[in-house]
Length: 272
Ligand code: KIV
Image 1 (cartoon, helix red, strand yellow):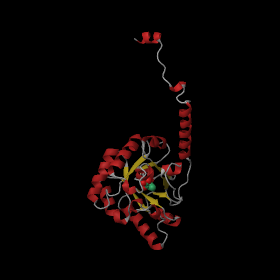
Image 2 (tube, protein in one colour):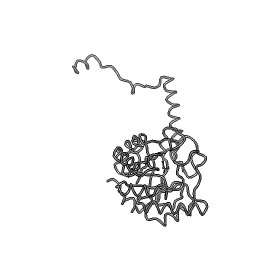
Image 3 (cartoon, rainbow, N blue to C red):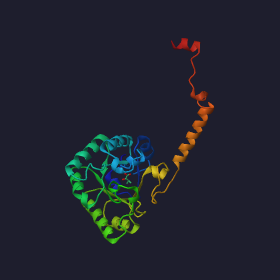
Image 4 (cartoon, rainbow, N blue to C red):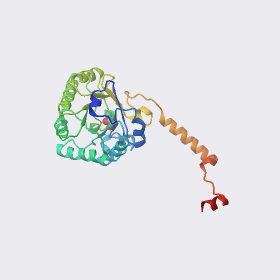
């Protein structure tokens, strides 16, 4: 059975969330995750771009479709790309409907707090399930060195608390909170009635999300402090490629079991 918003909002255990951009990754995650996000991080992780601003509608629809059609159980969210929603609620609705229709996803995520509340309200009142995203907003960061913890000073913390409340009041069913100190994550989680999904926001949130390639050791560059690396798949891939190189060069591959044989004369007669 596919997870519903009600399942996510009433989960007795912390929500387990990861990103996926492809069908094989989704197939592996489906049994284990409550929610899978087709993040605009796809532009950096799969395409090697320097910013999530490089993701566009075509990219989100392509990857969103691959992931959504593979999901049997997990709730699938697709990110609205940079430039597709921030300036005009009517354009946001048009683009959200394109993403929902063309991917078959279960909901949409967009970045922003108070400044996006009226757009979130417009989308939710038009039956688009919305997950908010506050704290560090990667679409607003132009340089990787500006990925910084948010809400460390009181004025910023107050603004983030107001952002969370505005997103909830606008009808979002959940909020991603990125890169904030634990006390603020705890205060926000206690103040809103929708699940908070933390990324770099401590274990007090109602759920956790990571970029899968970061936790699997498959991303380019350095991962943030909040990532725990559970595997080093990049190293395993390199090891396999080295073995392939050696097998090809020594003619150990292809071996007999990887090679087609011609049919014998009597087998050819039987077949005809
Ligand atoms: O795009 C993404 O992967 C995200 C996560 C970091 C939450 O928004």
